[in-house]
Length: 486
Image (cartoon, rainbow, N blue to C red):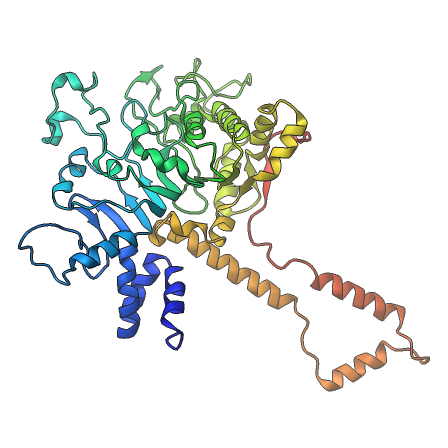
């Protein structure tokens, strides 16, 4: 690579994730000289303003008199750095952290950026998330608001984010939203700059957040963290947030590792709930399977009963039907659908075998969301349900996750590649020696010089075997609902 023109080297290096570029800093001085300035293309908002982790000067835009820093940046270089920014990241922070930095860095960001990544904080008690971490006045020590400005439970309202305000002129090509509370009430309208609507691509990482509640029901069960689909609008708010001009939308049901269920931490997902049977009425308000089952200590109810799925799939399908964008739904098979044997489904999910999925449930809801079958058939080719493994193989994860966030998924993909490679090698015919080739030719040829029927049949079978696809490593998925046609 070191023999290539500098321009071509930079093109190649810019294709690498930042973590991979970081490892190249120690390879050689020449490579470090090329890689180090590229970190100025990736900006992170901090309390001190614009930061560029791993760059020669992490804070090149600070306007502080007499500030002594290593690798100082000249004024003319600062403009070049600002205009070269490709990605902008905002991480969860306290609302006081995004105020005041403008006094340290008086710079206007360029009008365009390739990627804007916003990671939401844990949702507030009303089920809405924003970039500000939810805090209470009695503990934060930073609040300068009057008591009348707060919610009844003491939580902070949503003051405008100083980082988002700085992006008022940004028109990103791609918007990435992480930690979206899909089972609650979505995100605040202040989480994205107004011009983000111009983005053509949206990637939303969905989390099964639920809100704790210590209320007991019937002496046995807690109504903790039940995101009842009738009470929350996360899926509907998600699709309403996507602008009509978006051409591609990717929804990722995020799990930390393969074999992990995507589910809220409520009682519907604990063993004791099924061992004792769902109480009537259900503390979450609905969602349980409509079955007349007697419960006792010896009669364990094993059918999956969730408090959110029926409304969630319906709301999501309704939004997908209204959108004209290509929709990618990733890792949907990590969700165990209602009314299947929960423990068998969990076992196959962990083992990586044939999975029971909600694929047909979603597609049936999508069909119902269209006025005609023709409209549904026309929409279906642009709706793709895919495994996490295949999405990672496509390379689309690099603008969304750090390598450490999905390291276990990356390990699995590598193992599947190795397994598929060995399968392909095992199917290849062994190389014959010259003596074996002569002997084989004699055996397959009759006295009149024509090929025997047995040899021809064997050759045909051999070719059919070699033409089979080699990669069958991704676990198959089967539908959990009825087998009626779509």
